[in-house]
Picture 1 (spheres, rainbow, N blue to C red):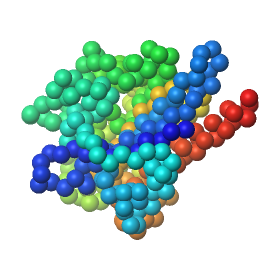
Picture 2 (picture 1 turned 180 degrees about the vertical axis):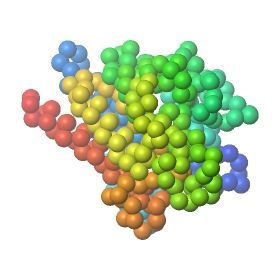
Picture 3 (picture 1 turned 45 degrees about the vertical axis):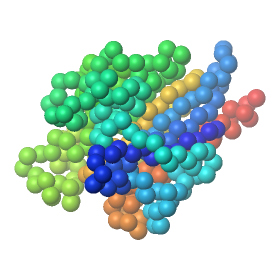
Amino acid sequence: MNYFIGLIYALPNLGRSLLSLGFIICIFMTESRAQSAPPKPNVVIIFADDLGYGDLGVYGHPSILTPNLDRMAFEGQKWTNFYSAANVCTPSRAALLTGRYPVRNGMSSDKRRVLFPDSDGGLPQSELTIAKMLKASGYHTAAIGKWHLGHLPAHLPTSHGFDYYFGIPYSNDMNRREEVDRTEAFANPKKEYFEVPLMRNTEIVEMPADQNTITQRFTEEAIQFMERHKSEPFFVYLAHNLPHVPLFASKDFKGRSLRGLYGDVIEEVDWCVGRTLDWQVHHHRGAHSEE
């Protein structure tokens, strides 16, 4: 297995801290066990929204515990010097999935920098995504987590090369209830403050999404998808919406870290990365034991 871990930075201007704008991408690959063709690498991209450069142990944080992400860096590659295509979600995610600058893939604007619940646009279907390319090469594809490239059917992951989708279509701070004060909503967040839908493919299955459990549920969905397709090549785009505010952690992690709720969230994301890695290790060993 190969691991790649790095932080991609967005630079809005020189006067703003980098720490609040970090995105992390973790990619690992294992060989599929398909018998009808030479093995193809399985690809999993794990993406965390607004994770800062210094939030991980491997990048020097003294007290947030991230053993699984650190392990990926130690066993694989650690990247330290590259940038995202934009400083906000919609254009940067579009660039990640298409390999094209936002001004070319249609996801840039000087009026509204990201898509909102009342937006009627999204990533054009004419764009060639990673998922479309891999699907054409025989891969099973899944997008799990935050999408933010259009919430209408024509712009959802299922219209962009993904066989399966489970997640929220835009940011977890959107659709805040009008009667809830903004300061209260972010200082003492509750799931009912934000009318964010949780979708499976093109259907809403929960609204508001329970963000207290969402990190672990995204991970379970990813593992279940990989289990269903373990004998064939697959591509999973696992995009956690946390630690983007509002911050939520499950009962198992709330109050666990030395860095408050933010640290709790990071440690839960790390634990979920560990679960994904453990599945890959178990599958890899199991596949070789059958030979």
